[in-house]
Image (cartoon, rainbow, N blue to C red; front, side):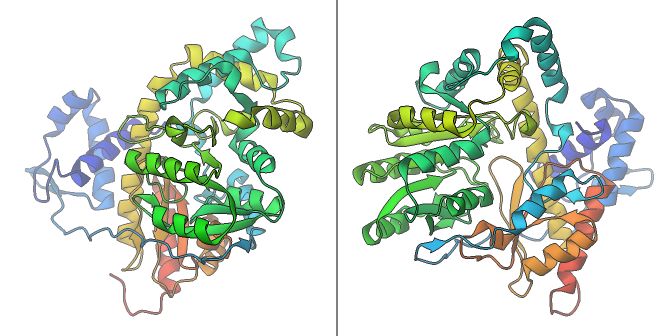
Length: 477
């Protein structure tokens, strides 16, 4: 995934952040670290050099390496959101297409779209599965796999749903073209144009685009960066407005990164069940928690069969395979038919390859590795932002996945920063696209799923410089 010395540097940096090594402490000797990590001394020295460049350690002649004694600024998280309390039509989403197009441009540092760099994905294992399927099951993969989808894949997903607290059968699952299609089919089934859909704020811009395309209205609900959507504010909104559905990302929300506590998940489902309001949950990041424990989905607490659970393998296996799924409960027949009339079927080869990978490819081993990698990258990018960005910047502390939601000083316009950064071949996601009413003018989202190195470090330094240029304050920190 990353160079070995960079991985060691990331591990040591995480130990420093966690307080295992404190300011002024001497690092273990080069030979000792060489033995602990089972690498050469030269690899350890390269890791030390990288940490020195970041300012995390300092070398003392004939004495060794010591943790820097400068005081790290306290990291403040963004405040609880305060969106408009009225349903609105979605606007301002035209920018998103340009944002995602940038992810395919080789010269652009891609920090905007939440698409992992290929080095973070199990590409070789998937290549083996595709080759195996193409070689051994040529006649099968050449045919349509009509809804509900490939049986072996649905069986594997059912097993994984059990890990998320849901007992379901393969026959309860419908395969889709990614989670975006799952969300679209779900909203098409339970709502109509003009209906009000309650959402978190900030919200994933892909959801806003779906609501927009279907002619529905979004009602943004205040959301805490650590605990999730405000249940009290949601109840007040339900009493005031005729809400047709609530769409939520309970596990490692995009862009906030929180994981809703289990008690709040249970209470949320209970509240909406009492009002007979369907919940659509997007669990696309559920497998990417940093503490290695797979959190439950909302459907675990569903006793009235009103929760539609959606997810995909786009963030964990390969986005280009476009394989997602729905556990639609009482809406199974309607969603299965809508899937069929929308595009007939999800590509058969993609379904069969992922099924083979889940059975034989060590998916859980991969997840354990990539969770740790994302945790390290989040920590390192956070440190760089603290170092390079203007004072007063606030940064989320996600519990999983790989994005950071950043609140800049109020005077900094995220759209101006986006445009300036693009001229420097850096793509970021400006805050207004995460709001139906274009709030969050001084917020940006950054994807940390890029290899750490000079390009990323330099890109973050440049972003900081551009932010300072938009910040009418004297001096740098």
